[in-house]
Image 1 (cartoon, rainbow, N blue to C red):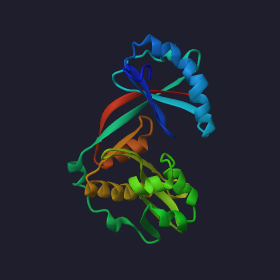
Image 2 (image 1 turned 135 degrees about the vertical axis):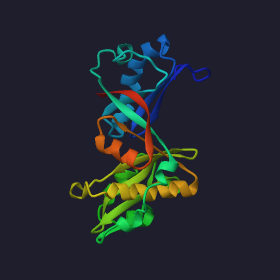
Image 3 (image 1 turned 90 degrees about the vertical axis):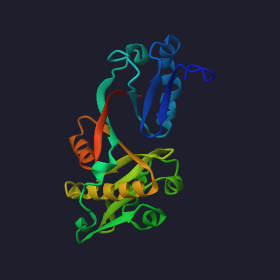
Length: 235
């Protein structure tokens, strides 16, 4: 941020995910110093944890040009867009029961310490919860479900982040041969059911070009809310 005591513009880092620019886009002090800050501080901090790309979302109150050249100063930034969704519980509750859709050979499991210790592809669980400071932090604060096949995590739906009672969904099917079988839908149904039981709000956002993720969100009772502009370039 430009001034900790009276900030006008700020860059928020969701570690292992992306950055968000919020506040006043007409702030010369912030805009002119941003490139130096990016090169001297952000790039080393990211590269130190294995993050090689700068990805930033410009929130709706920002009106920088496309691309915001003052900020990126000579860097070749690619522009893309994301949809944010809002969850509609009344739409979700209209869906048929899902539990009898888990077929023979597949198992639904909650993601916890016992699963991490016993599954055959432990790295898939660690990848699913990598946005948390540690597995213990996730087990204490997050929600997660997966579908197992042959002892391996075939698909998962977890809390990528949480704030108050809101949980941002992260979902994937890491085993290629298990895709397009509805496994992500089943993991998500279990996840959303627990959110509702605990009084939590599930949140979803995805790139506009990710047609599968967009379709799954709408299938699960989410509706498109806002289109956000994003930029990315390598450090």
